[in-house]
Length: 218
Image (cartoon, rainbow, N blue to C red; front, side, top):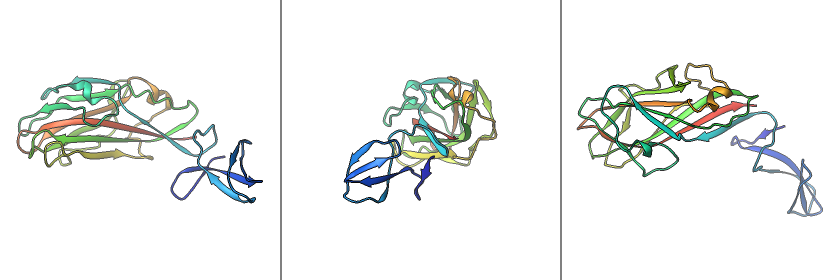
């Protein structure tokens, strides 16, 4: 059984006996002098029921569609701020589509996918060059599916050069208008499609990171 505290953190009940903490698996830890119920946070949850999540970063990138091309697209993958893929759009122009896949979710096959959250870290590449979202959508088997989570009214990059805006889409109970299974999110061709549009100036934009959180119920 998995139990959650008021902060949503999964906990296990334990007892302190003769100066040792005894958890439900019979593993002992040194602490305390009396018998009383306490809580410990597990490093690994070996099973149980409740909500879980896994945080992922793309390992594959592809550029498709019409629009302004991207430079240094390999910098759009992985968990790193400061490595930059750039798109130098003219005013009111759109970028080509960035298709970010290769998430390698590793979600257990017997769970229910409950939601997807995507966070994009984007910054102007020149002060005063703002960019908005044209498309933020899921890719299933390499195809665009479900709901577009942004529009050209939502600013994703603004302010001074290099000023990162972290924009989040979806959530723990949001499937983006799609039916998702463990097999789908574990596939190499599951991912996110992003397209931007210049708002002011020339829309020169730095794309720094895409974070995908897969939420599931055990």
